[in-house]
Length: 577
Image: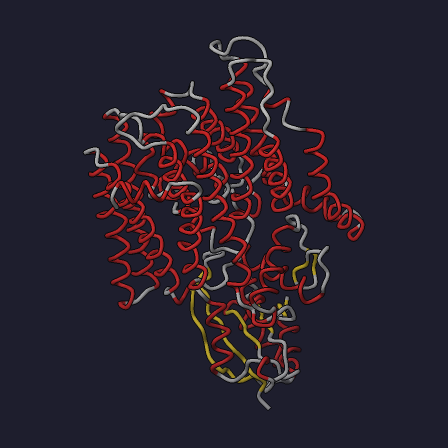
C-alpha cells in the first residue's frame, strides 16, 4: 500500500469506518464456520431463543430453569437479530452472533474515532512516524484484528458487545480528560456535552450487557488517572480533577437509571428478587474469592496469554512499553496506561480467570502500540517487539499442528501450512521491515499476517470433527432418519450423560437431559431416540432389563468433549419391538 493510498483512507471518518468493516469481516467467516460453542455461547443463544418462543423478554431461562447470570441486554440484541435475519425454529447460530460482530466493529470504530481526536490536538509526532489520523487508524486496525477481539467477534455472548461499549465510553472520557488537561486557563469550562452524552449512554448500555464490568473499567481508569494527577508536581494550580467533577453526574446517572432501571425493577418483581441473589451472590461474588466453576488460575495467566491474544499487535509490545515509560506525561499516553494497566491487574489478581476477561483493557494497549510507531525506538524495545511476536507466532503454529495431529486429517494440512506461514514468516517479515524503519510496509505485513493466521486457525478448528460432538450427534439423527423434527418418530430426543448446551440449542428447548438410567429407559419406552454416554451404558442396559425393554444399537459416535477434557463414546439407541 502506498503512502498516498494510506493517506486517503484516513480522511474524515473513513478510517473509523474502515477499521469497523475490517473487524466485522475478519469475524464473519469464523461466525459462519464454527458450530455453536460450549458452554457459554450455547447457553446464551438458547436463552435468547426461549425469549422468542415464549415472548417473555424479562425473564432469562435455560430450558425449564432460570438463568440468573447476566443482565438482559445481550439477550435482547440476540433475539432481535434472530427475529430480523432468521427464525427461532431454524436454530441458526449465525443469527445470534450478529450482535457480537457489530460489537467488535464498534470497538474498532470507537478506537479510531477517539484516538484521532486525541492525537490531533497538537503535533507531537516525529517526522519519521505517522500523523494523528494515521496513528488512530493503526490503533483501530491493530485492535480490530487482534486474536482475542476477532475471536470474541464470532461468539454469541457478552464480551465483544461489552468491549464495543466500553471502548466507546472510555474514548469519550479520554476526550473529556485530555481537553481539561490541555486548557491553559484553569477556570475555563470546556463545552463537551456531546462527549458526556456519548459517555453516559454507552456506560449505561455496558451495564445492561454485563453488569459491573463496565463500571469496573470506569472506576479503574478514572481512579488511576485522578490519583496519578493529584501526585503529579508538574500539574500546577487547581482544577486537576475538574474533568471528573464536571462529567455531568446528575443527568448522566439519570440516563443510566432510565436505561437500566425498568428492566431491573421488572426482573426483581418477576423473580421476587431471586435474580440478584443468584447473579451477585452465586455468580459474580465467587469469582472474586475463589476459582468459580473450576476456572481458578494463579496471577500471571493473563500476562502469559497476552502475546498470543494480542497478535499481531504483539510485534509492537516493546514499543508500547517504551512509549509508556518515556511519554507518560502526555495526557493521551497517560490515559492509555490507566485504561490498560489498573483493570488488567484487577483481572490478573482475581482467582477466577478466563482468557477473554481482560479484553476491555486491550484498547489502551492498542493505543500505546500505535503511538509507538511514531517514537524512535531503542534497541531493547525493538528486540522485545520481535521476541514476543515470534513467540506468539510459534504458539499459533504449535497449537495448529497439535490440532492436526490429535483430531485432524490430511485434508487440513494446507491450511495448517498457510496459518503457520502467516504467523511466523509473513509476520516475521513485517517485523524486519519495522526494524529497518519501513513502517508502512511492515505494518501491512503484520496486519495481513494477523488476519490470515486467525482465519486459518479458525478454519482448522472448524475441521476438527471429534471436537464437534453436538453437530455430529445431530447429523447422526438426520442420517439414520431418527430426527424427531422430521415427524417420523416421537420426540424430543433424550440424552443420558451428555448434557452440553450446544446439543440443546441444536435440537430445541424440549430436548430431555435425563439424570438417571430409568428416565432414559422411560424415554425409550415412548419410542424416542436416546443417546447414552459410555460411562452410563451398563446402568442403562440394567434399567432396560428391569423394565422389560429391548433396545437396538443404531450407531456409536466417538469424540472429545473439550468442555471437560474427556474422550466420549456415545451410543444412539432405538426401541426394539
